[in-house]
Amino acid sequence: MNAAPSPASSGSLWGHLLVSASACLLTVSILGSAVVLGYKAYRRYEMKSRVRGFISSLENRTPEELVDRAEELKQRPKVAQYILPELKRAMANARSEGQLCAAIEISRAFISHHSIERALFDLRRDPRETVASLAVSVLAQAQPPEHAAKLLGECLDGANAAEVADAVVDEVCAGLLRLGEPGLAEMKMRIGLLGPDRRVWIAGYVNAVGGPYRRLWLDMLLADAEPRVRDAAAKALAEDRVAAGS
Image 1 (cartoon, rainbow, N blue to C red):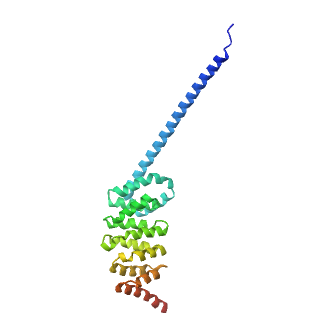
Image 2 (tube, rainbow, N blue to C red; image 1 turned 90 degrees about the horizontal axis):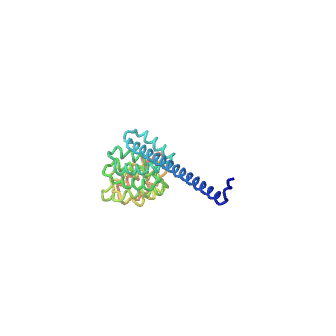
């Protein structure tokens, strides 16, 4: 008659079974984790490839398509982690002016990111006026308006030494006028950086564009030290009196 297994041997058997089961579960867990990590890595690679393809094809898209894509990207903030590095790379190493301008247009969707804002600000001195002025026009959309006004004002640094392209000054003036009170306050601090001819131009531009801050801009120019600037502002304001009397 066989003897019953001792409690010690039973415990040893169960211990071996538990160890084996634990090892098996650990192996499955490790393999499962590896599969998940591998899938995630593949998805990241796939997304990066798609983003690179998208960035490369930007110059072949119409302005309307770029606007639509920028609006679409605004609604998908999670895409930013993949778009931003490629967008910054394109803005720094674009193979053509067309691709660079397209990348700048798309950057409107990501102007709230400091790295994109910095890249746009650096482009304000690009020797290609189309590129530089487009970058400045996007900077005008930064938030809050006070920050946008400050950025635009800093784009005028060096204007009195002819270091700023005319197209950039055009965009700065247009942007500051659109920004309302913050824009006017910034221009009051920077107006001395612009020559008399440009200040005369501003009087005509403000008068033509109009808007709720037209009168305040013209009042600022009416106090200018240059007679020609004061005359241009006074002529624009005189049109108000003529219109009121008619």
